[in-house]
Image (tube, rainbow, N blue to C red):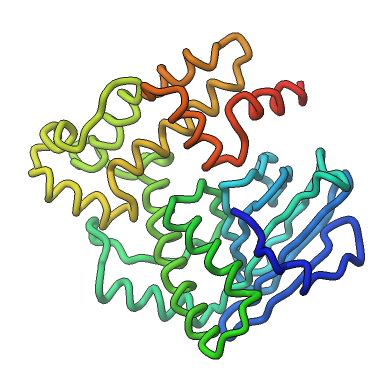
Length: 302
């Protein structure tokens, strides 16, 4: 993601730590925070639910009693109202600032969007869609990344229908986040049993990332037609099976790159990529760094 080219026309640098540029819309306030020097234990809190997404650089976040975690480009964070963030900036510099979007969301719009989603596209497990009362840290899907980029562009655009466009994007963003959270619950928290076919498909994918995987092959494993499996998977998780496989392979590759004893070629082959150039391209598109640069950044911290 990138800031709009004309962002500098709206921005005034008043401080080197979490300098804020705000754009107010009908149902949300979009804030761009910049930090240009290293800093520790910077506190930040919003009185509405907030969606944050890293654009550039790195933060180390601490929420309540949770362990600290790195917040990197390509990742987002959903927080309930009045959640205090304690933030460290270990690498920020004048010529290498951090950029982060933090957008407050209207609780009324969240409630209406969830109600509409429950009416039109209820969850397959019989449960209702609901806004999480706790924080949710996740890797952006392609769709979420595109929404964020469009919102960033819209902030600096002078258009009579600006609020209408923004409201439609925010509704889609809320739905995409709910689907991402449902997907994370399946994967990370084991909330479904082994008899569930989607659960089996997720587990099968994660256990065979280094092998050739096709939608046809996986649908046969769960005794569903290819078209029905594709539709049910996307309806439930908000991404296609192919997008999910690629996201999981990227996460696996990133973890392996943190092991300095592994060659980059071994990493991309073990993660299921057949082409080094393709791996380099998709890795940089997702994380903002080439695999080599990412490894150098990680090793530089050790």
